[in-house]
Amino acid sequence: MNTDKARKRLEARHRDLEQVVRAADDLGASDEPHAAAGGDSAGIDTHTADAAADTIEREMALSVKESSEGHLKDVERALQRLEDGTYGRCPVCGVDIPDGRLEAKPEAEYCVEHEPPSARAEGAA
Image 1 (cartoon, rainbow, N blue to C red):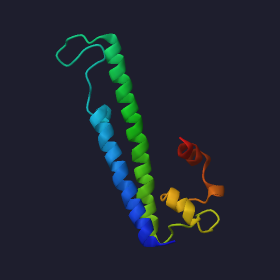
Image 2 (image 1 turned 180 degrees about the horizontal axis):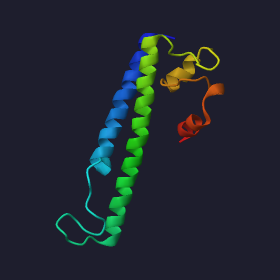
Image 3 (image 1 turned 30 degrees about the horizontal axis):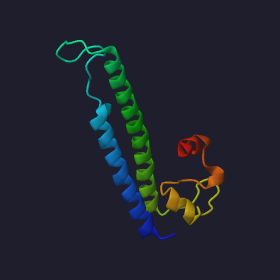
Image 4 (image 1 turned 180 degrees about the vertical axis):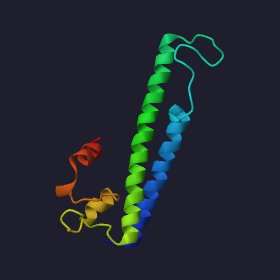
């Protein structure tokens, strides 16, 4: 495994995820309070369907943001493992993670055999 290539992949993934988080914020996933459903900030009633669509859009953006922030943390931990010299080695069995897996998922911490079930479900989504 080439650590320079791994670092570049991780840094590129980090930048991409940061852009996704910013885009989600732009779509309404920020922590700023929103106008109540059914009305706008001026107190004028909004059509119920419009309010529902706005709510769904905000919820989807928030979901994307939360997921991307989780992946960002995974990438940051992978960068730390790279610094520590433990990147690319499964912490359970000590076997080197195949280069192909690290190319596809540079933040991978475990070999496929020891990948936690929750991480497998996230990777499939």
